[in-house]
Amino acid sequence: LLQCQPSALDITEAYARVAQQCAINEQEKTQAQAPATTTDGHRIEVAANALNAQDTHAAVANGAEGVGLLRSEFLFDERDTAPSEEEQASAYSAVAQALGKERTLIVRTLDVGGDKPLSYLPLPKEDNPFLGLRGIRVSLDQPEMFRVQLRAILRSAPLTKLHIMFPMIATLEELREAKAILAQEQALSGHHDVQVGIMIEVPSVLWALDEMLPRVDFVSVGSNDLVQYLFAADRDNRRVSDRFDALSPIVLRALKSITDKAAIYGTSVTLCGEIGGRPLEAMALIGAGYRNLSMSPASIGPVKAMLLALNASEVTGFLNDLLAQKTGASSIRAELRAYAEGKGVPL
Ligand code: PEP
Ligand code: MG
Picture 1: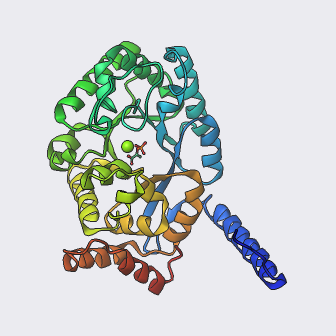
Picture 2 (picture 1 turned 180 degrees about the vertical axis):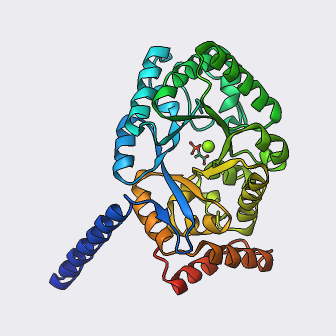
């Protein structure tokens, strides 16, 4: 058994460290109420990933400028029957009300399958569920369930800046089908004032940007799945996921190709994977052209603190040079960290 007998000095030091961290957290929380602008004047929009209205209130209190990803699965989880349109509408409206008309709400349509089973909907047993019926594929396979969800989401359009986003889009055909169903429901409900977008999390989309970007109002990069599928390495299996770094030239080039193309088409881009909530990774994302990030509410303070000390044009130049030089490297994490430390950017 491991014996832990801290000395009186250890205990005093530990209390001092806790007090110091609490003071930093408080300061970051106060700072986070203000919009984040880099030292060279680039405004970065920071939103939160949320599951429900309670999360949304917490997110706004933490300085979120909107909800960049509402994971609608929460309504469908752990139950025997599908939630009714009424039940869904009241949940989405509660989130929309918590945000109000000045903030953005991005509702992602049901993203189940793979690691997210659905108890009342017996999905077929698959040998390889991560490559099977998941995300938008489930919705297109069950169009009535999809329509009920869309009708429920559309009912919150008058309450907020409503965005609807389709997960796991892999082909133009899926996008066309999903958009056609949504357009029919919009025509029936009269709610036309809605932005429509997709998650970029399946690598095939990286080579279909010229076709996809002009057909949507916005895209949101799901880096959790995108990295997992790029490297064919399960994001939750540490034996393989640790071998691949999101701060590799491969990933950063892929992420930069999205912002480069989006600028050409004028499509708005955000990123809602976990990396957006880590200050070092978020710094690299600013270098790769991202100006909108969505993250867990607890990450907003530390990320905004990093942004307030960052020069966006300078880190862009630094990242571009690194990507040009380190073509064969598996990670440029150490170089990015040294850059942040040298510039006094808090991580
Ligand atoms: C992602 O894939 O990065 C993402 C945000 O979606 P989820 O983690 O819910 O799959
Ligand atoms: Mg995903």
